Length: 150
Image 1 (cartoon, rainbow, N blue to C red):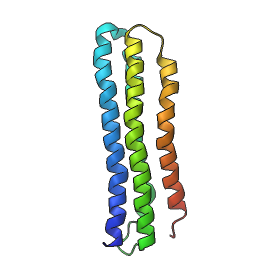
Image 2 (image 1 turned 135 degrees about the vertical axis):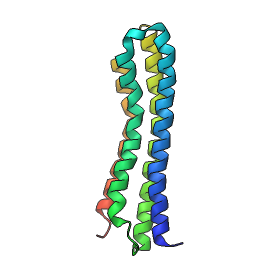
Image 3 (image 1 turned 90 degrees about the vertical axis):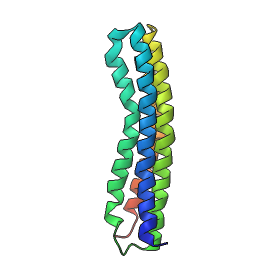
Image 4 (image 1 turned 120 degrees about the vertical axis):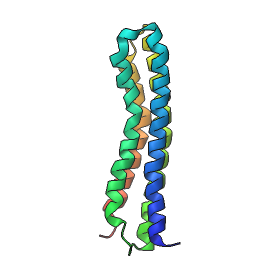
């Protein structure tokens, strides 16, 4: 396999998996909003705020791509290509899983708000925990890119 193909596969995993995770997470929260609106339509602002949270992982994948873009050259070394691929795996899978799980946390908070409970703040706090692992995946990507030869 050509090293550039391995690097592009890493970038594809990095962006594709985080985009898929965000799509699932936002869909999970969107479904919860539809149900909660029947009970408490006045809390739409809270619903939208919680629904948007899982979209950040897709943005991390996009940022990761920009971190790796300078290395995607036809003469990329095999070692650099492996590093780009590894960063793609780390960020891609951490973004995929954390976005889905964050969507589930937010959906439960949306359901609680729809039932009349004051759960927005506590849901935001709990939703940070899955997000942390996507942030760590992005940090690993940044550290890998900082240590690659120019």
